[in-house]
Amino acid sequence: MDMRKISKNNPFFFTRLQYESGDWDVDQRMPSNILHSLVQYTTIPVDTVEKIVPLSSNELFESPFCYLSGHKLVQFTSDEAANFKSYVENGGFVFVDDCNHDIEGLFAKSFETQMEDLFGAGELKKIPNDHILYRSFFEFDGPPATSQELNGWGDDLVHDYLKAVEVNGRIGVLYSNKDYGCEWDYDFRNKRWYRIDNTRFSVNIITYALTS
Image (cartoon, rainbow, N blue to C red; front, side, top):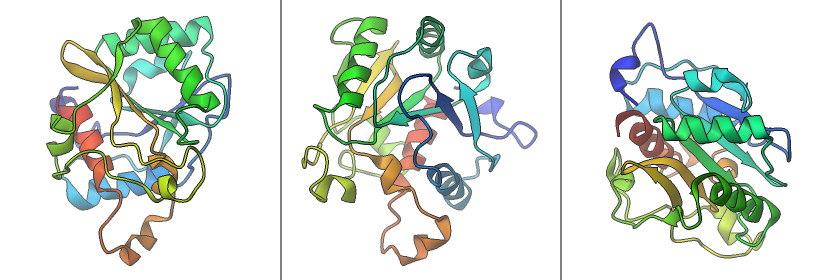
């Protein structure tokens, strides 16, 4: 995404993708928390109102960044599948987060199957911990762990990787089993209680989406 398209009169906005299967409306406080972090740490002009866009709608193609999550089945309709593929292949960025943080769970298995159907076997692959994503704003040694991974729910594993579908050397789909959505799902005013702001990695994700 060309940062020149983000301006005072055309600010960045957060788009949540609505899809017909599963439960897409999760982590409801997370977008405002992330948008607060962008205002706090960057000079990116921000629209603080989350947009909800049906994946089957052409309105998708106006979004610089999209978020998709849930706990249940991911089974795109034909229109949803066509739009997802076209959006990614034409320079769009989708951050997908597994609320179950369970690589054997229904969301994970069905989403990975969708990516294989759309982009081909093996195209959704682990990204190395020295990827530029981890240096696009703050410095990380790899994907930061979440408290969700450590609470004995899901697969009870700390996943030391993220996966991605890349198009022309750029991430188009960033996929996490770490449940960042729940990790960041709190009122941003409570951030003051954290010794280290746990939303900092969200700034990396959006900065990468806008500048790579």
